[in-house]
Length: 441
Image: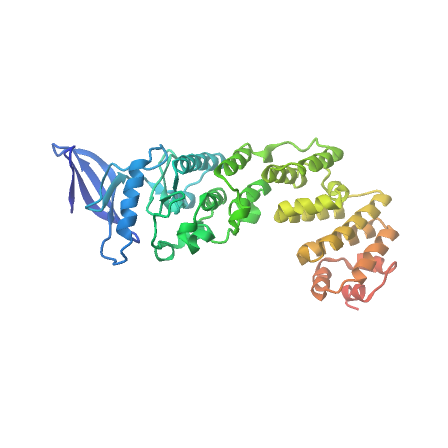
């Protein structure tokens, strides 16, 4: 058991039992005693440098962490009680959980998620404003109190912006699975290439983990289950190409504040079709990709909006292309929702012709851009709506489209979902080998 004297204050920090081993430091329990030997605080931890690994980089990393801790003063950045560069120790307050443990073990609501992330963002805004990059931002390096107050810690990989003060490589040799999950691709290739966009990448991954309650996923496997605006925000922050991410923390924060206002709560139940069409046209003219994407897909994919199928058909083809580019996953959801409605609802005869015509147009425009799953949904919707309404023009048109298909896998998948009665009707107006295949003839 080691004792460390805080010179000048005459207090003693006593190193206790080992809590955990790390890559370059071990963490121990620690107690604080005053000059009379009375216990002041037993809820501390002591971080001690491991000097015997022979890499020659960790002492520099430790010294840098101490220097940056001393420079930074923010309520959401951990401030050590005591540090000693010569001894290689840092004494800090002990927290019950880090954010990774919190996500895995605590039940919390969306409001709590936003409150926690706002604290993280405030701290990052502060230290980047002071000219620093953390470069190892991840849930394991974010401590959280029982009252959900966060503290960012572990500035060992940090650096001043626009300065190449870290000339040795601290990337792959010292990363763990958490770092690989949360660090930007360019940063993992070369730590010195990290910039504010790399920090934004880490923030995007952290927000995903916090919102989706999904830790340690290199691939964000639950991303497709999230609301479209949340998903777009995360995707834009974590794009592989740094030039396509949010380019500044101000831009990232602006999008986050829009997200926090929760556009998903807006009421679309009273919105008329013409209003929706006009709104989308105006939104597509704006420069804020996040705002227009979240607003558009809140409308198109909302269960409360009563004109989804009609919006899908009446929306100009060039606007279909534009909103697909904004968020292809949400666009696929728009296809699925619209197709389900098209198959179930009743329409006037002339409008059935418009439905099938629009579906064929979109299939021709997007061609291989759409996965087979969504091509088959569109084709089956056209088959179903035209046959249910006995609209011979529409049946002839979709029959001709099917006859021209050359993708055997598409035909095979289409066969699984089509109704034989509907295919038989289609054949009365445009027969083909492909239609016979759908009927096993």
